[in-house]
Image (tube, rainbow, N blue to C red):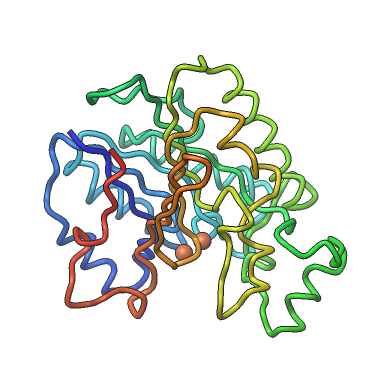
Length: 269
Ligand SMILES: [Fe+2]
Ligand SMILES: [Fe+2]
């Protein structure tokens, strides 16, 4: 059995939707879906409904796009409430989420746990000379602004920063409680380190790409591999012995339309 990973399926685009539909079955294998299935619960539902029967187990973590809600939605249905709605949708399909107990990997090798995390971003991926208060204007000065500013509501937290801090603290406590001899396969939509959030064409978009609070998690915890997406820039590298894999499919122009989604699944184990 194998562990595969993908992210940023963005099935709001027809090309991507067809690619998901055309993926063959991997009945013995597990698949991590590391966020940005699309922009609505219906998009997530399509991905889960299509792929759940084709894998032995799916693992999901939300991306920023999955968390978008219309501004007209009441606050008690946005932010955390919307996230919890998506979690319930996953659980209906038997898909593992950041809210479930971490699954033990049933394949060969050392004891491993599959750890989906939802850590968000807090604008800290910025130069030391730029303050948090200046960060959004600093990005705007280069013509960059994330739609998350308008569509990713943090309710009932006052800010996305505070929601991120709460997610980081709760996740850190869970990781610290795991036995040290268990190797972790972490799946988070955002990269865990600022040096991975490098976007050559829109460098200041980095403020919407993660949190410096997780910079040393691969050293503090026994992380064998950290899977992420969000950047739409596929990569694989090793830092301090930990493998970091950006596994996104991305928008239709960002993948080769003569290939299939199967060509873009990244084998993790
Ligand atoms: Fe994305
Ligand atoms: Fe994203």
